[in-house]
Length: 401
Image (cartoon, rainbow, N blue to C red):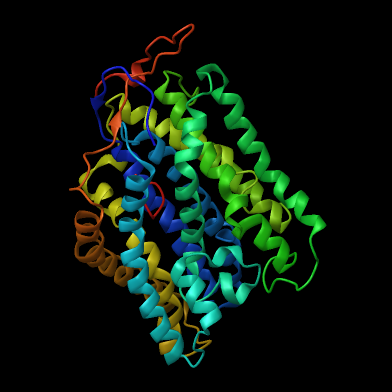
């Protein structure tokens, strides 16, 4: 995976994007907490579930777009595809294998031991390619998104090589095309079987799998991140600030709650999410400070992958341990969710230090790479762009990078 010649680059972190990762994983936690139906007051439980109904979908979409953005931003000069794949494997597989083993033990304890047809594809992170819910939602069910990430990683060297050949002035067209493809997926899913029905939302398992789980269907979000990163790297700016972009994300989320289920998953939030990521990166490269760039926010962002991998197991099996179907008064339910969050956070910090960092150090083939650089704009053969202020000297993308 070689790169085109560049001008001199300067080192600058993207700390706010790291901090923003933890905000995204909070959306996922809030969504999965609602699935446990913790409140005995049915009205409060319903209102909470309604508010966070699409929060999990939003959080995962954020990670897919961010994955493409940061992998592009931090691509190493003269890197090879094999070297890139080795580092990605060192990042995700050790923690995945550990939580896979924990999930095997927990489902056996709960009396619903996994079959080989569930356990093996899950271990190999290919289970999102199977259109059956017992497979793609098996064991630690959040790992379906890792199955998508593995597909992205295998595709990335080839995609990036092609993207680098696109003229800088055309990148925004390609980015817009990726954003348009996402809402076309629910429309195309109407051609798929209408049964079996989903136990949540609306539509069939086939339709949900095609729109939301199938790795190839999530590739446009990943590519959107790639195109946005290339735009900034070639001297273009996104014409929006961080706060307006965040407002667009919230507005898109509010709209998504009013749409039919399959259309509300990612259709109206993917472009605002991409603009927010680009705006935050643009602000980071300008050297401006942010609450997301504080040491605490950065540390929490670094823990986000481990948090993502353990929180669902703690919520689901912690609830089973206290009693299947048990509910609590509002203060007690809030306390239980706070305890689950705190335990997930403590465990994620320990796993980041004891598993993630050593694995990256010893399995990636080289010592840890330096922080992603903020490259100066690349030169086009014709009409080189002017260098914007955002390129002056001065993630992992999904919970997985």
